[in-house]
Length: 402
Image (cartoon, rainbow, N blue to C red; front, side):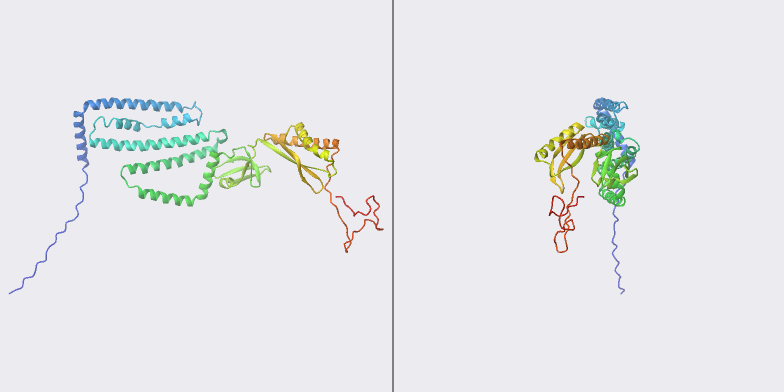
């Protein structure tokens, strides 16, 4: 009797079913049918909604026309009304039409499929329009900040070209991310990739970007302008050009100094052109033998001489006991920043002080020094061989006046 071999069980494995691809033709057919039925059922609401939408479109076109008139060439460049006009004038036809349709969408009782399409198209229009408005507002604000005559020419043209590029890329990149997120796309990986890429680019070109942003800081903050006289570090000169990478300064000794914008802003900058007065310091020493009554009158004498010379005495008074004189400090303020006025005033004041002191009998002593001569054993050596001083100050050590 033959043994029967068991038949192996056959296991049926079912492959995972793939969702059928959407039939575009069927969707279009359904949308068309729904639209026809909608027109038949709500024709009166559709007519009223169309009239309202036409009014909204007309109002938005009129508003855009007003913005166009505000930013005509006759208006001053950089004025805030011009900035607002530029923003409004950039309203697109696509946004105007989609806004009107979206406003009357619910009143017209549009079918679900058509409502979704309108929402999708309006989302695109709104995001792109907001990006355009933001770009124009930022650029208009920057032009308003740089509307001074000190910021005209090649430098500001180059800067504005680069600023337009950076602003456009930044604004539309954000708009693209927002649009994709509203459409249901997962943008987490995209944002992370853009962040990593931005960090890499920033580290590779940090020196260039540092000078670039320093140039923008100079343009907007205006610590100095072209033609200003400044002092920085140990150098002094006149600003000749403000570039995107460096600033060119003509030194008083004739040479042109070129310094990077970042290095320049890292220093303490003294803007000589913006000073409202020039201060001239004087230190005047008088002899110790001057009578106290005369010493008490010296501050008033100095103030009187300053007023006669055309300046203003900020301070006139006793300063310190000097090695060979009683020192008085005199600070004179000359209005304005013109050294061609301050220098002649200083010269007149010098001559006036010398004349007045001579008339008052006030002596301005030479710097003096007393020298004592001693033998190796420490005894003073008299100035004459016989040991006697033939002057009226007998017995006093030898004094040399230098």
